[in-house]
Every structure is written in structure tokens, then in C-alpha cells.
Figure 1 (cartoon, rainbow, N blue to C red):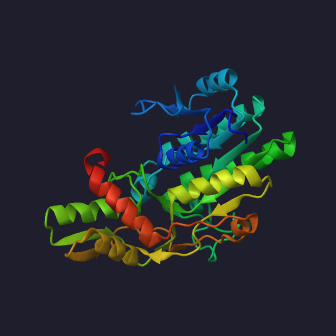
Figure 2 (figure 1 turned 180 degrees about the vertical axis):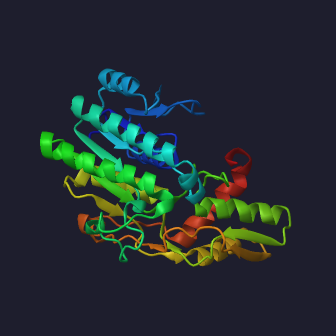
Length: 324
């Protein structure tokens, strides 16, 4: 990528998209486009924002026809935690398929030089061997609670592969692990486990609550990666990886939900108890990425979990009024 190339970051107002924008700006890119749908971004000074509903085929077609981006990061998606995935099943599969179909097809039609599709570790089978290698895709049943989202992401991978096979498009796919960091979602109804725990511990300390309730048994293990590490990996792969096979992006180590809660408890300074609710779903028992392909390509992350938790908790503490 050249510094003056037109780059479209789909989902630029989200946690992942905004991290990619930050990484691009820090690397000297100046011609960056992003989208917003209903709520305008607070700061539009560093990037060209277009009002664009990515589920609307005609709007996406017009955008690509007018802007003609050279590179596309497809980081837009309808996302959420276990509860949101399980309750809004139709919305998760419909909206994600629409977004992917529109952007990937219009990238082909407008002759985008390269597109990166960002998926999710939930594409792997519920009882997948650990760590999860890329070749384990479609070798078993998916986790029911996030099956619609996972199917949409699998379709995105296969769509990129098909457009490469039929048309020769340089479309690549990457599968990030569980992410956290700036611009995360702290809504207790729709957020992922790490930001939900940060908010719970913060509010428990502020209100001197006797305990913090945590969904599930605490036994499932999850891998977490700071979103700034993901963004730097995406830029690295956009410049250095052109193969058909999708590639995992992760830290390479995991932690139980109970241990994660203990880490956040320590960072927050909360002194009460932890209460686990085993009547709530645990989700997939374990999700650890095999990152051998990423390391072989020449990239390794740098923000360890303990350091990242301190960073993100401090950010939440400083800005909680605007984050919840």
C-alpha cells in the first residue's frame, strides 16, 4: 500500500475498525474513508466519513462507484456476546451476510486491488481440538448460541476464496481471537465477557457491592488480544500476505473466565466476592487459536493480557460516563 492510496475501512466507528484507522494514521496514510450509519462520529477531522448503510446494496454500490477505493478492510459486522447472539439470531445472520455480500461483490466490480475480510474464532466447531488450526474449519458442529453469526463469517471466508478462484481477486481473510481495547462495547446486555466484567467490577467498587455476579461456571477458557495488536497485524498482512488460505490472528495463550475475573478484580481494586451463576450458558468450552501461520508470516503481538487489562481499565475509569 502507498501512503496516498484510497483505503476504505468498513466499520471504522467500531472497536476493530477504529483501531485499524489509528494504525493507518500512525503509519502515515492520509486518504482513509470510513462509514457511519445512524450516529455521526464525534471527530471527523482525520478521516473521510461517509453516511452509509452497509446492508443497503444500492448505497454500497454507489459508494464504491464514486470513491473507488484501492484497498478495503472489511471490519464491519453486527456483533455481541452470548446473550445477544442467541436472542437476535435472525438479525445476526441476515445483517452480517448482507454487509459481506455487498462489500465483497462491489470490491470485485470496482477492481479493488486487495480486500481483507475479518471473521471470528467462532467459525470453529464447538468441540474443536485445541489449539484451533485453520484446517479445522467445517470439521464439526458449531456452538449453538452463536451459530448464525459463525455461519455468516464462514460464508465470508468462502466468498473471498470463490472470488479469488473465479476472478483472480486478491481477497484475503483473517480470523481474530477475542478482542478488547479502546472503543469497546460496555453494554451489559450485548457486550462480550471482558468489557462486561470491567464494567461490573468498576460499578461494584463504586457502589460498595458485596459481590459481583458472573455468568456461567467460570471454567471455559478464552484467548484475548488487544485490538491495537490486531490492527498492526492487519496492516502487516495487508502488505505481506496474499495467499488464499485464511489466517488466525491471536495471542497464542488462553485464560479461564474465573482467572480473567480475578485479574480484573485485582486491577479494579474491588474487595468483594465473586459469585458464578451456573444456570447461565458457558458457550464453547475452550477457544485457543493456533497462530503458527501468523508467526510464519513474520508477525507476533506485543501487548500481554495483564498490561492490556491495566490500560483498558484505566481508560474505562477515566471515561466511563461516555462509554456506558
